[in-house]
Length: 352
Image (tube, rainbow, N blue to C red; front, side, top):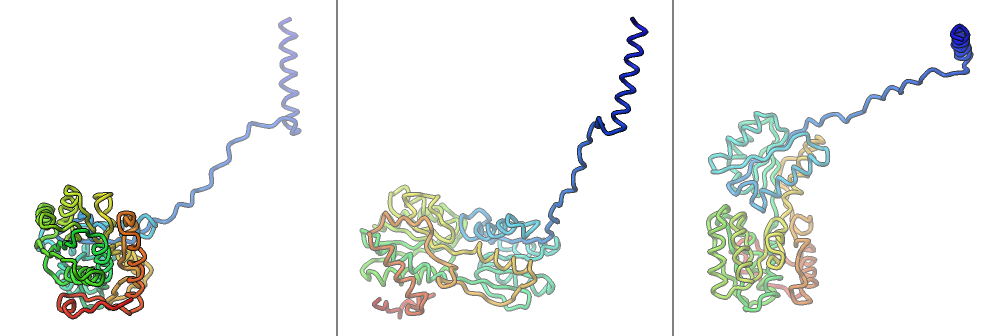
């Protein structure tokens, strides 16, 4: 029995071998080799910015500026973005120089206070491209972006004048500098155009990074009857919004949509699209289309405007239509909004 089984086994092995040679049985298949992955080439472009003393997390224009750079990276247009925070004005130039030394393709200075530092850096580093927000440096390697804050602030004045019940509103400014005068003049012109009997209280705190001062200032205004507070004070304005929230009056934010700081308190924000500016110019540098000089962005250019979250439901029913009507008049040139207090003194609201 054992010998017969051995012979049969050997015969079976031979048969299988013959079948395999004739293609009757297939050898085990190997998994196909994976094709090499076509990974996109790493983006080497680098965009950096230096904040003013307001800091990167000011819920305002520094934060918005950095948002433009992070979007640049998210869209695959930058390999590295960096925001450097300044604690003192003396930090501006060293912080910018560090970005230059690190070979960033564009270095941004954010804010009016960064003008002198940017001018000095542009002269020291003629082959470096710079972007500047809210100030102007006339140099072949600097793109200066300014905004017509007065136009958007005019619309905030319309909202405040329509919404106030006490006929008293407040304006809380940060530092007493020309760019903040744009906000004040525009806001007051908007209020005047709707109701010249509404009083506007104005206080400059002198700082962009002092929420406590913003809160105390707003509380004093509210205690004297103001029921709508508009701020143009960076991080200081967070305190003004907090005061309005506590006292259950309305606030108007600035630069970014600040409704998140008080859903039923912040009825609108004067949007200043710094993020669009840093994104746009950085993208131009990436594409080899950098243009030095001054670009001014207003309502017509969609550089300023009302926030998406604007609480029209908390205002008189005709407020939205009225804001849109005035916005169109400004875009068309029919209304020229004053951008400083001297011009405001001679401003006459036209009949629309």
